[in-house]
Length: 252
Image (cartoon, rainbow, N blue to C red; front, side, top):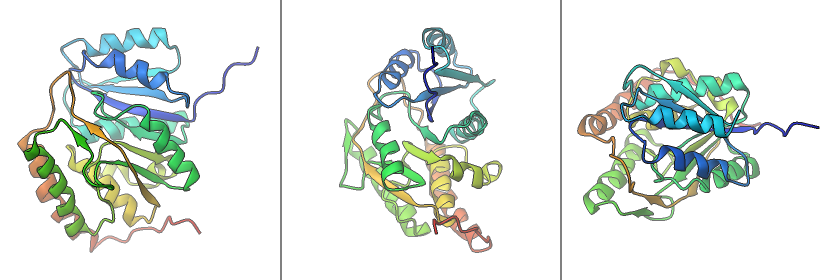
């Protein structure tokens, strides 16, 4: 009897104290018509998140994996660790996604389809490409997020409406080409740096509109230091780009 083909896509889900969401988000992703494997990066959650994930690994053998780190080392380093793991495993499409259902798991298929149908190298699940598609955020946070993206566009010249989006699908050729060990930002500014670097390498970036829903369970990890890194880091990012020669990976 032939074994089922292994999925060509994996979604990386960083988790810290996500015991309320861990099992449900794994079940939701693995129920999709288009198969995605899952890699969880757990930063030593004291609430038992890792144990929940390991139970799911038994329930879905070969479809769920976990990397456990010794503490909170930052969102950016979590994704870099996950990218390297997924490249070693041979996945063609590697996605980022939050654990708290703020990103609809069903939209993973739309991101992957956009990569295939539009020959995109990077697909961004965008809250702002068709207006403001955010549910249950306080107005102050919506305005902060929206104008933060506009600020990043202004400073960097990025032709992306949702520059801080954390719902992204990369083709492996992007992650193979980018200097992952030189990505400096650890917080949410990591998302900006990855998009900016991919753009400067002339990879094709497209945005797919999504609806972002504020978490119902668990606690947000956003804080003022993360926001400050993004505000001041983009100026340094743009400045450094004047002295950097970027290779051209545009499709001929």
